[in-house]
Amino acid sequence: MNVIAKLDYRYRSIWISDIHLGTSGCKADYLLDFLKHTESDYLYLVGDIIDGWRMRRSWHWQQAHNDIIQKLMRKARKGTRVIYIPGNHDENFRDFAGRRFGRVAVMNQSIHVTADNRRFLVLHGDQFDSVVKYAKWLALLGDWAYGITLKLNDALHYVRRALGFPYWSISAFLKHKVKNAVEYISCFEEAVVAEAKKYNVDGVVCGHIHHAEMRDVDGLLYCNDGDWVESCTALVEHHDGRLELIDWAELQKSSLVEKTIKRNGKECVSQS
Image (cartoon, helix red, strand yellow):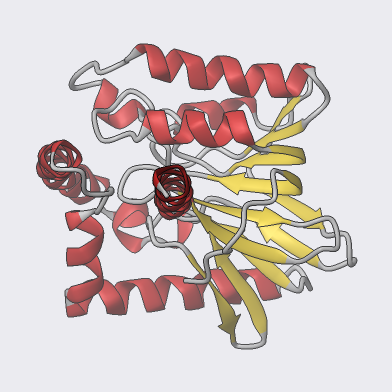
């Protein structure tokens, strides 16, 4: 995954997905920090923003989750064009597709035109997941098992933070190491690109599989903006049309290291 070395706080477009508000796995503090420090003309919410599946079984809604909703609404009021594309976990919002709520448009999918006139199909991507489409009971069972893994993830993060270590996701690590998971990701990417070709576009932006990626697949630029559960990633468009992936946890870590170096440097100067 390409990660930018320096954060540009003002973008033309931002894509985020798979936030899963209402669950303990949501990295709400990281996302809220990201939203506070970035602005854009367009903001795409590419599905699974609120986790209706998990909230039917248990309720986990913190103040930070409220703050995220309020921050998104505030951005819309201040002029950001917000496009909400519901996913499978917030599928009930698909009933409102085609409607606008202020400056927030709800759509099943969208075509985004970049500053350099490239066309991108934007969709969540769950329709290309055969488990979700044809065996929802199995998807729900997998979601339950995934939730347990995320609880382990949270416990590990708590210990690492107490010891001064940066965020690291055990669930993302396991996903990248298991052969079947790697094959699934590859098949998903190919299916999404095959669909995008029907729209005569230059690329596609999606979410759903919690795996940030940007690469050429069969002649089209495939972009997955990742998630805010296993990782803390977003896709951004600069004002010249250039697309990049941001790993916010990595950027926070880099910023902390830079500040520490500067602080230590000042201390050494003052001591001399």
